[in-house]
Image (cartoon, rainbow, N blue to C red; front, side):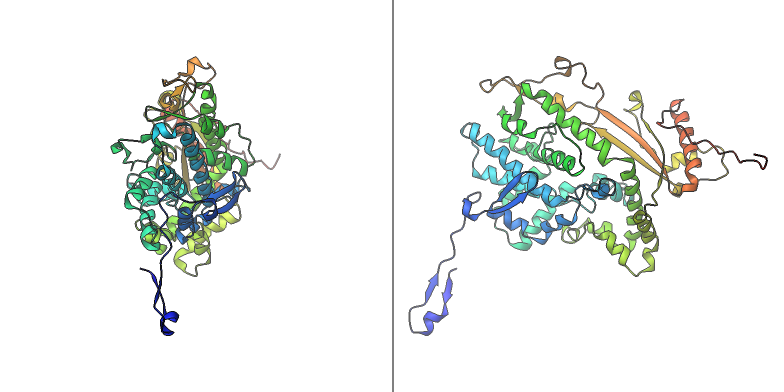
Length: 484
């Protein structure tokens, strides 16, 4: 419908109907219609008009209140960056990947503006379904509320649900078929993936969230961004892989000379998990916050928000302030735990051990009950509520398998043959094992450290016939006699 001009009609003239602006085609825009955002990692980022429509919603702006690394900033003070800038970064890198492929193989692969727009939107919106403190909500809190939650809920699936809600609520003009593909790309590496039915341009689904071998622009961004924020160096150069990638047989492949660059991607990610994401103090704080959220859950209905995208977007890291400032006595225990975090009265680290390599296949997570049941003799009788256990898994994205076995390479740009490269053809220094499982135990009260440590040692002796822990168990302090 056009716009009716009442002023002209009042003067006895013919009514003037002003036509609406022409509808912009999907993926079609010029430099004048973009908005510029400066990112401290990638520099200038140009947001196309459709991307701006999504960014300028309260659901997307919520990402400003979700720290990318959750509670890590309490150990690495610089880690205060958010899911907002990470999402813009993935959008930028997704665009670069598509532009490189289009420039080198556009006609051959039939890449058009629809493909470019769709992949970029998937990069922009892939993390909108994250909960408070990012992975803590999904992997630590929800499973404690409902042990079966891990099979029913993922942030990728919530991103897809929330995307539908945003489009409906804000009237964003996007064709249902394109929206469907964006959602499929977002969940491509999750258990909710539906890309098996995709018959053409399968490679497009491996750019943002690669379920085939784990090489994607999401990792490119967060590895560089997290390393910089935490003050750690990174030798991984994502631009080499972006510029060198080619599609052969509907699969993204890389130059054989970049084998070690691909390997560096996986090992750098594993190093970040070991030194940053699963740092012993970070895990201590996470265990405490999960306990606080559990105490507040019945009153605030936190877990219930995860069932409805229209309510879920209201959850973010400010949940801690809501608990602290609430006048209700029902939240007393939750407030006390958060106060302990503020005052650095953390759960006390007792010890840790790495699961022996030959036991990895059949290993089951250790529980607080396992520790308590391993107590033999002590002046203090432990309860499950006295012990906190963190089961850490660090791998190269494929569990105990080597992800490089799923990556295909090519000799040079004129070669149409793709092939895998085995580790032994490159170096004998590359690791033979691709996964670590680490068990850490904490005492929730300082006076229980000795009793928990002894029970943890007994557990190892019972399971493996030897102590595999890193540190010696604290020895009992002898009481000094009056004559000393």
